Every structure is written in C-alpha cells, then in structure tokens.
Length: 240
Image 1 (cartoon, rainbow, N blue to C red):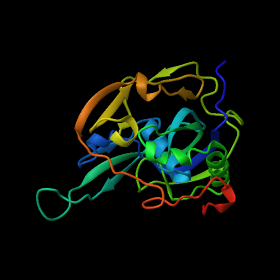
Image 2 (image 1 turned 45 degrees about the horizontal axis):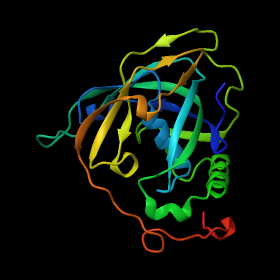
Image 3 (image 1 turned 90 degrees about the vertical axis):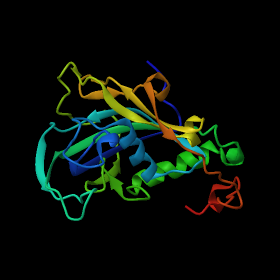
Image 4 (image 1 turned 90 degrees about the horizontal axis):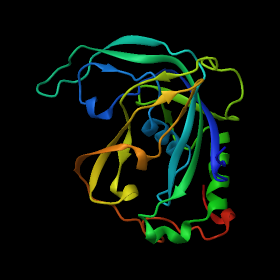
C-alpha cells in the first residue's frame, strides 16, 4: 500500500447541485455534467480552502458518497453574436457529497518563492482552513453550484457505491497544465479514462495523462516583499 503523504488533507464537500463539464464546451449552448467530479474541479476546491503560489495541490482520490442523480433546468444565457438571451437546458448533478484526499507539492516553476517552502507551516494552515470551511467560497464545478466543506476521515461512513465493484467512464477531461505550474509557454489540457472502484476514483497524476495544447500563455512573476508578503519562518508571524 502506498504511503500517505504527510502534508495531506482530507475533507468532505457537499452541495445541492454540481456541474462538472469540460471547460472547453462552456462557451454556450446546452451543458451536461459529468457523473463524477473532475480533477481540476476538486483542485479548485482545494485552492479555495487554502492556496499560495508556492505550492501545488495534487488530488489523490475522491469517494462518491451519495447516489448519482441528475436534474435539468431551463436557463437563459446571454447570446454571443447578438443582444438578448438564448434558451438552454443545463443538466446538473443533484444532492452531491464527496470525500476528498489531497496533498501539496512545491511549485518548482517558482524558484523566487523557495524561501516560503515551509511544509509544517503550510500544512498546519491548510488543516485549519479545512476545519473552518475554507478561505474562499466553495463551488462545485461552476459558480452556480455552492458547496460546503468540512473535515472528515477519508473512507469513514457508508457510501452509495461501496458494494459496486467497478464503473468505467471512458475519456474525460482531467485538468489544465498552466505554465506557472507545469512550465513552458502554453496552456495545455489533460485527458484520461477514470474508473470508479467501490465508490472511489484514484486519480492519475498529471504526468500520466494525455496532453493537448490549447493556446500560448505567459507566466506572472511573484516576488517576496513586493507582490507577496514575506511571513518569515515563524508561522505565528504570518497573517492568515
């Protein structure tokens, strides 16, 4: 059994609705949610709990706690080619709850932030933010779907798919490779083929996904003392 990273966090996230779609299809028209959350959506939740450019959140696995069910809603998105609104049907997931296991690694593309690589400090802050429900608002795939976070022990409690041996989902969107995390000078998307086993999806790491280029993108630089406050090595000095 692989060792659990010592800088890991575990949390439960739930909400009335969720919409996990391929972001490349979000420019308009009908929207239909994946049946399970994407790596990028869960990474966004982890970043809403606690994030600094010094670190990168890695989502290890997710556990689906409630039965997958969908609900459609009539929406009126703005037209892109003219004034007014269109009529579209969005298909959401309804009454969702997940357990998430994640850990962080250092962002090697940010050598200017090397003095801030204090594992104990960041891990303690992250755990406190989980207990407080996160630093920022939590969204389940889109801003329309409010989520709520609380601390939990991954694997605790009964899940709706604990007795389901395996469900394969085919090719799905995994996440984005941004230049400030993955290097290079372009935005790339990742694809993979997830399989849920007894309610748990163990995510492939970004390095093991199929990667496609989206567009060129530059990197914003962060510097301690200018664009980022230097908190020093004493955690008590850092304003959180």
